[in-house]
Image (tube, rainbow, N blue to C red):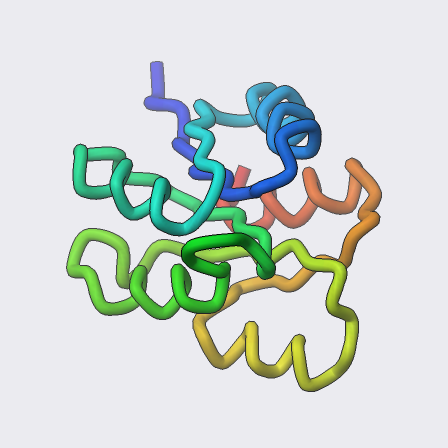
Length: 124
């Protein structure tokens, strides 16, 4: 049997983090982090995700900083990133894409749209 992909979800809203974990566990194994610092800690502990889904605005380390850091690490420089955010301005989208986001989704989002994006990125 093929190995299931691993998704690292980074979100400071605990309810949304839990919901994303439930939704995405149907497609992949899921690792959860409450902010960018916790995500980086997990990477250093050996978590090697096939996809990172991150909120943009979080305490300690935001999603843009996390995406930038992912691109500097050998283990994660090719790992696709999907950004989730309440920021909808064109400048925010461009900044997210420039920092390495493969996709940019605004909150609130449709679960089916997120699942479709994840399937597309992971080629499921």
